[in-house]
Image 1 (cartoon, one colour):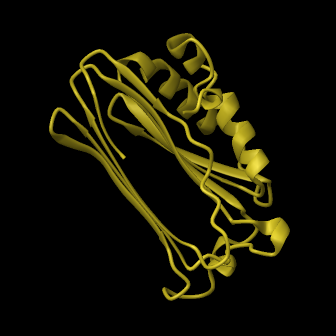
Image 2 (image 1 turned 90 degrees about the vertical axis):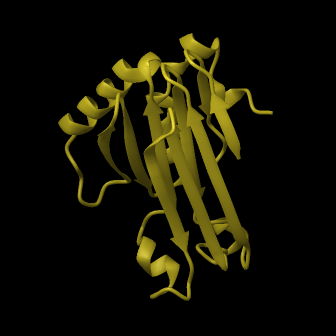
Length: 179
């Protein structure tokens, strides 16, 4: 996916998490160009696969690349590569977690929301065996947050709760208005 967000505009990219079936080879590249003053909310999420069908972390390969630039300068370059050939089985590496997401909140329209999310993460206790683990860092005038959850539902709930600020900007929940 390639997109340019014009000056002063806002874009929300909030797809459902990727769910790979057994043996699947999945690759995606997301390239976002932000003009000065542009804002972005982006979710890049994936799950363990079709666990109910016995296909937990049974895909052949998952690869996701994310590039975000603002006015031609790199804001974020991120990649996730899960391949059983690169070490222990993927299921062993993922442990109890079945869903992962990267959330990017950037730009002047969402700077206050990014600060609120980071502040909430800083105040929240980390439960060693909890059903979810989150961590975030500032990203220019925004934030990048990583979430690991023991279920896709737990991940989706966290995202919905933390993206409630987008309703006013977009006139509704972007996750409910998919093309």
